[in-house]
Amino acid sequence: MKILNNFTRTVNVPEQGIKLEGEEPSIRDKYKDDIERVLISKGCLKKRVEHLASEVAGAFEKVREVNCLVVLKGGMFFASDLIRLIDDETELRTRIDFIQASSYYNKSTPSGSVKLKESGLLKGENILLIEDIVDTGGTLKKLQDYLKEKGKFFKTCVLLDKGLPKSPGLKIDFIGFNIPNEFVAGYGLDYAGMYRGMPEIVIVKKELLK
Ligand code: XMP
Ligand code: MG
Image (cartoon, rainbow, N blue to C red; front, side, top):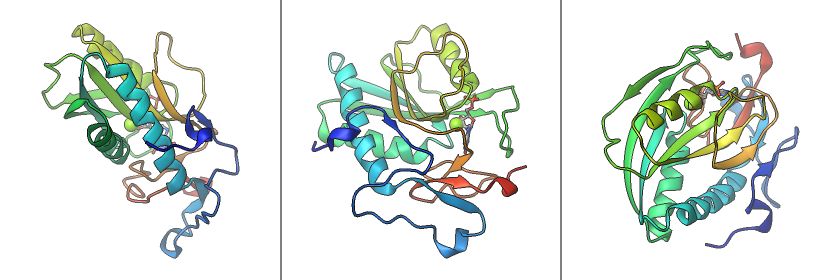
């Protein structure tokens, strides 16, 4: 895998966002009224996810397989890119299952309670928990406690970290980007069900958030 040097560690995203040289990310007209700006361009996401795939592969190398547990719905595109890279470019065999954790219920502030809905795999060891974003860490902590209860070996991979104080005991093994404390959407993340299909990470206009 060929990776640009500055994507070989967690990337700190400045307030004004990041893009690759030569990329000119812009908001499509249909979203102009809702979206403030692009925070992480398509190219940057691609490079960093490529590197995350090799980091994860290194951590699971000895066991030769990785059981990916994708947190729905926000982690969908991140997980899909990450898992296909792991399968395509490394020696690891993969399994995929999903778990749903609802904490935001269409709003832009945490509700404080987290509901889990599991679809049933979790029989294997060697789980990679794949999540879109960590804010206070409440959601991830709940998922991790659940896996610990079941006695599973797991690692946690998160695309975005807002850098806020985290729930005690939370352990994140792989982080894609440290981002400013803004409400973001795109690349699987939504606001009220919208913007998941946007290929970059964008900042939603504050006046839109309730
Ligand atoms: P906690 O506080 O539990 O929150 O770490 C993490 C969960 O809240 C959602 N979340 C967001 N979703 N844009 C989103 O689309 C955001 O900026 C954002 N911040 C938090 C997300 O579902 C995550 O699992
Ligand atoms: Mg989530």
